[in-house]
Amino acid sequence: MIRRTFLFAGASSAIARQTAMLLKEKGHSVIGLSRKEPDDTYDEYYQVSGYDFSTFPEIGKPIDGLVYFPGTIHLKPVTRFTPAEFTSDLQINTLGAAAFVQAYLSDLKKSPNASIVFLSSVAASVGLPFHTSIAMAKGALEGFAKALAAELAPAIRVNVVAPSLLDTPLGNTFIHTPDKLENMQKRNPLRQIGKPTDVANAIAFLLSEESAWVTGQVFAIDGGMSTIKN
Image (cartoon, rainbow, N blue to C red; front, side, top):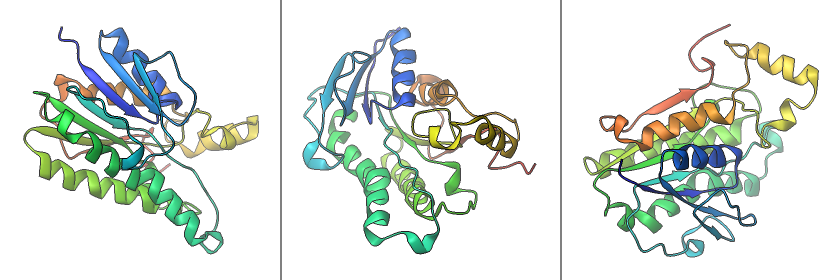
């Protein structure tokens, strides 16, 4: 097996850490970037002040895959969002992803089988009340990913994983009591809340040579929520 190198932005998230552990078990190297304190899950780790072009460190070696994990969940009526809040969600979810690609595209082009994966949300494809800001940001991210896939083909593949609610610290607000957990499970066709492993497996597949004929796709890892009506 060829040892490959992957670079994660938002490396402190539960999904990122699960994906890193999975890839390392397969013998690969994973470099993490995060605003939070160093994490020994990673082979190399860089603490950054934000997700814009000026804050990304120089890696200076071939990178086989980029994954952009940062995300937000701000839910409230559209009339209560301020312009600054809309802008913040766009910056973190979408503009940061674009800056991440710009920063490391030259390193990615040094790989013979490079791949980029973005994290979206079921809210980009299903109209959900109070999700206007995140739906707008993730919808823009999915459009960016498809255009980027066309631009970088055939050398670099670009795909998106779009989960529904997961059992992570980010999603805990919505499932932290038995009643909330039961209500959220009932909303899902498989009557389950997703786990970080569910998404990590999909990301690992999209980074691997097993997905060599896959690009420009949005993979719904959501228990059927985006396509099945209960």
